[in-house]
Image 1 (spheres, rainbow, N blue to C red):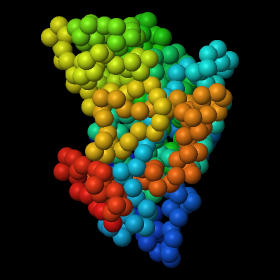
Image 2 (tube, rainbow, N blue to C red; image 1 turned 45 degrees about the vertical axis):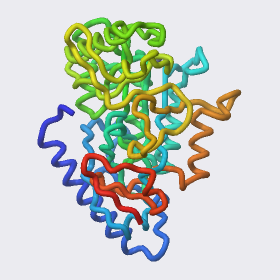
Image 3 (cartoon, protein in one colour; image 1 turned 90 degrees about the vertical axis):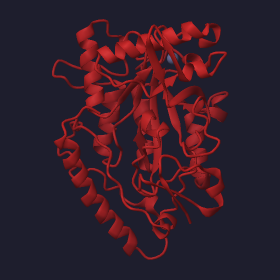
Length: 364
Ligand SMILES: [Zn+2]
């Protein structure tokens, strides 16, 4: 993130205070702490006005977990994480994949009330997960860089009704709900043609903790392309994003969820002297992802869930179904220990994870 150095420190200190208070509160509770039923402390000062808070959002520093603490909050960092997939956000839906701003808001409020905290796709695949103890990470992803995802008004704020405006509004009302998401874009990010407007949009998103990353230049079916053409499609977007001030993409989403014949070509490669190497490549369906610490986690084919109701096939693979399923199968869900430096799992799950990047494992 490109945010002034002092801001994350202030936010960090505020969060240490809040988390310490939360931790002491939790340790004083007799017996079952039922952490997901507790009020999320989140931001130290909730906004006084209904106007969405646009303060930059950093990652909270977290706590130091112990086996006792991990057991108390029922931490399970071997569990599944919903990576929700959105396309256009339109007041009048024109295709089954479209969602209305009202449907998006309702789903985000449901997530906030059920104890989910958004992280970006980059944070997810790199295991850089800072979610308070007892809470669940969720990844909000938006494909195709549609104008309904983001735009700035004359005052430099997110246009009302766009996905980002809805996310910011929900976060302002639910202080534990971190307003971040991932936008996978093509050659015209957010439908903007003018370079200056593209730059302003990408800058706002990156400064506010959102991720803008690669969805290929022209959205082809990569399965039909030769390896060199696959690389060209990816590199052209990397060069555009670099010009717009975004960091190199850590993640990409496959157009139509369709991998190239040589799957590895989507993950890493080079064209015309420019290289790319993603930590995660995302599919278009159809179930909660494995934990990024799971031995079976396939970072070349990461599962997502289409945001939608229960009509037709959606009964089995869209978000309403899977969010209910995760509530009904709490043992299968990723539950954070609140400690980004340790991976906490119930003892019987120890064999299912790999400890990476020197992260310490707590098996309780
Ligand atoms: Zn797409």
